[in-house]
Image (cartoon, rainbow, N blue to C red; front, side, top):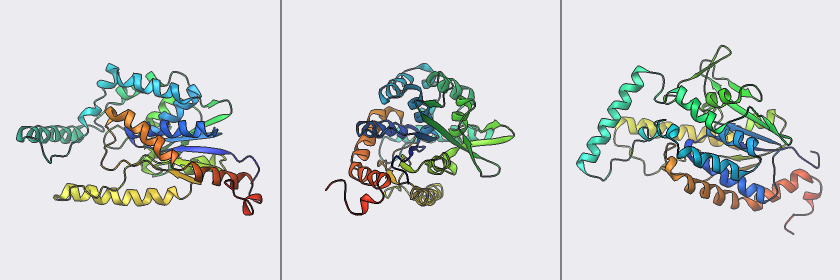
Length: 304
């Protein structure tokens, strides 16, 4: 290991919870940690692309908050996706939610996604105004998944907007993206946090930021759909955590019971990312010192 390891930050998928990436990246910046590589999956690909676009977090936050106020975003339809808990509320509220569910089920049977890819492209182009994969030596990588073969598909150049759309094509919600003979969907299907892509791009030291859903111990399990959903969530969580062990440091904000479509909680998510990253400061400093000084670290600790 050389004295100056190649540092990567891997940004995972998680929809609106991805706003936490910005809070975590702000903490890393304040520590003087500026990555050589930034990789993204799903919403993490947007966060990574914005970081390359601006070179600082403030610009990323401004762009995303501006997007949330536009008619483009309002017409995207994410508000129709989140099925709220039916415990509590009036009878009419519960009935309205059931009607909403039926509409969503009917749409899901008639088309490949609930969100039209054209609308998502317009939203992405609002944010990504230049086809830029590198800034001041920082390189961007994006992961998608081949729906037919199950293979990871890595993007490090080419059309940035198309790469982001492919990485963000949440199965069932956003239609797959056809690219070079492949059918591509969300990178989070195979790499919720693109640690392996970071390694492939040459990273020696990877800080992974996982904004995925944790296991919800209070989830409803009183019907077949709820039971299947909870079981699938448990399986996905354990697979994700197995891959996360390949990172040098894992930053993992807590989002129990929070759906990926809750964009109205952006500020809360940013703060959650800050808190999670701040809790890892001592570990980050120690592990980075060990990476930079493998022999010295055996006899001296950076906090001594």
